[in-house]
Image (cartoon, rainbow, N blue to C red; front, side):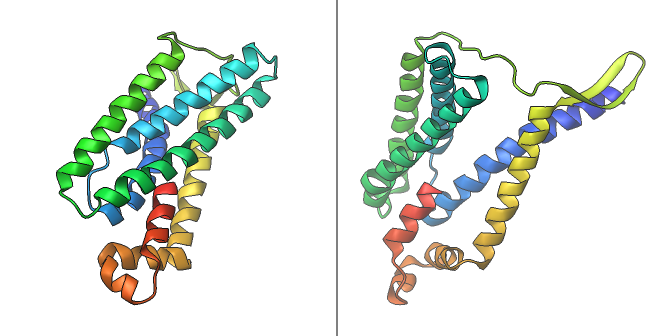
Length: 207
């Protein structure tokens, strides 16, 4: 039973990360109504960028671990903004009205490009940083088995739950959320009502 409890906690941590990924995917997919294979690759690419930058800051710039991680997060966010803008303006907007296969094939090519770029950037080496906030938090124990999660895992779950909850509330009550739903239902009717469809689309891809 304790082993099952441990797996449930592990699943909650993994599920929190997937929930964040799914929330962002829905924003783009709800307007495109096409399968965007590049979204997961972009998520992974920015994560890899964060690791590479943090390792560079820690090993080459002699920054503290927290400063290195902060630098990596900033770099990942900047890359995500840049790539999202390029995708929305140069790919999705031009292919949105064409065959669904055009988006699928194009985003598959982007997926392969980002994956290969990550591999080349890392030079096929694994990079490791010292553990951060890795102290285990005990939930239960018995018969020599302990059910734990680390502090960083708990913080991850709390942060993701907070972000998804706040984003969902803002999406339900904000002007952008109403505009997004209108564009998702009928972009031509939304444009006739004065909504800037292109701006809504670009913001959805960026978020």
